[in-house]
Each structure stands twice: as structure tokens, then as C-alpha cells.
Image (cartoon, rainbow, N blue to C red; front, side):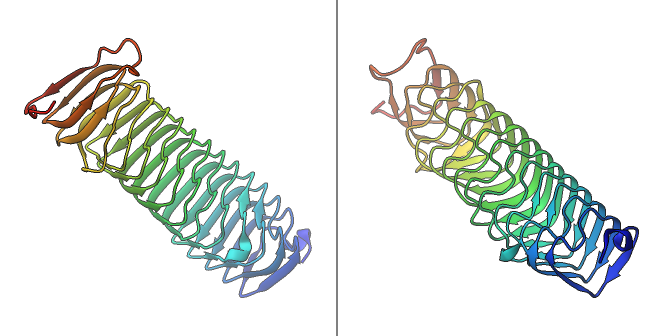
Length: 293
């Protein structure tokens, strides 16, 4: 199919494969189309609507502008499917392909399932996510910014590294090393499970969150916790961090916070030793102080 025929057309019930079958096409309505093995099926396209489509070949949507995908499937063969693209909306779609979304501006995901989210959403901006479930999500959201997330479940490590300007609500995040090196991230009403949460972050704010995993929230600058709770395994918290924290549960242990204030019911152990860094003036207020502290 040539570019001239493809433009301003509706294509339905077709199988298209090979190299760039719809290269540089625009104003297409695709329905029940299968893109079989091949490469770059819709490269350099604009204003594409794909409904009930199946993507099997790699790199199908690179350098595009204005893409809407609904009720569709990206199989594992459609790896690295959407890169260098702007204004992409995806709804009620299953993404089995890894490395989805690189250097994309304007991403909206609603009711999307990504069972292989490895190395997905890198260097992207202006991201809106609602009712999304991801698994195998190692290194998700690397170096991305201006992200809004609601009703979200994630399983995968090293997520949100070096992200900025992020707001997350009602999430269940299972991730070792989440939020490393981030700036201006706020998380509301969520469960954060995994080791080494938030290390080296700046202006990380957690509101009514439940935190589990060893050594959380160390080496942070301008850390804020509001009405959060901690699991028993969340030990050795806050080393070399400056923070303002109101915690509603006991904390197993706190180690060498740099400065600020912490208010909590009790701490099993407070470690302030020769390794604490200046100004070493964090005020820890306990409502019920154990005898061994």
C-alpha cells in the first residue's frame, strides 16, 4: 500500500507486514488490523487511530505525532514499539512487548496492562497514568518527568530513578531502589514496599503512605513524611537525611539522621554514633520511649 493510498483512509480487517507498510501515512483509522512480522510499520506517521489492532513486528510507531490505540495488543515481537513520538493515548490495551515508550512527550495510559514493563517509559515527559498494572518492571520511568499516576500497581525494581515532578496517588509499588535520585516527587495514600527506598532524593514527600523494606529514606534532602506508617522490616531509616516527619506507627530503628525533626509513637532503637554527619541536630520526639533507648 503506497503512502498516497494510505492517507485519509480507514483500513479494516487486514494483515500488513514487511518493512514500513504504512510509512509516513497520516489521518488513518485502523480497525482489526494485524501488523505481522516486519519492522517500522507506522514510522513517521501522524494522526493515527488504531482500534482492536494487533502489533507483532518491532518498532511499529517511531517518530509519530498523534497516536491513539484502544483495545489492542502489542505482542513480545513488537519490542521498543513507541519511541520518539508525541501525543500518544493508549486505552484498554495489553502490552507484552518490553521497552515500550522512549523519548515520548504526552503519554496517556488508561486501563492498560503491561506484564513485561522492563526498561519502559525512559526519557519521557508529560505522562498521565490511570488504572494501570505493570509487572517485570525493572528500570521503569528512568529520567522521566511531569508524571501523574492514580490507581496503579507495580512489581519491578529500580523504578522512577532520576525522575522529577511526579505525583502518585493510590498506588501499590513493589520496587527495590525506588525513587533514587528523584526531585519533587509526592506520593499519597500508597504502599511502598522494597529495600533502599528514596535514597539520594530531593524534596520527596510521602503522605499517608505505608513503608516496608530495610534502610528506607537515606541520604535524602528536604524529605517530608506526613502521617505515614512503617512495617517492622523498615529498619535503619533516615541515615544522613534532613527531614520533617510525622509517623503514626513505631519504627524498628533510626540511624544517624542529619537534621530536622521526627515525631513518632516509639522507636525500637535510635542509633547516633560517630558517623553522624553535621549538623547532627535532628530532634526525635517519642510519645512512648522504650527503656533501652
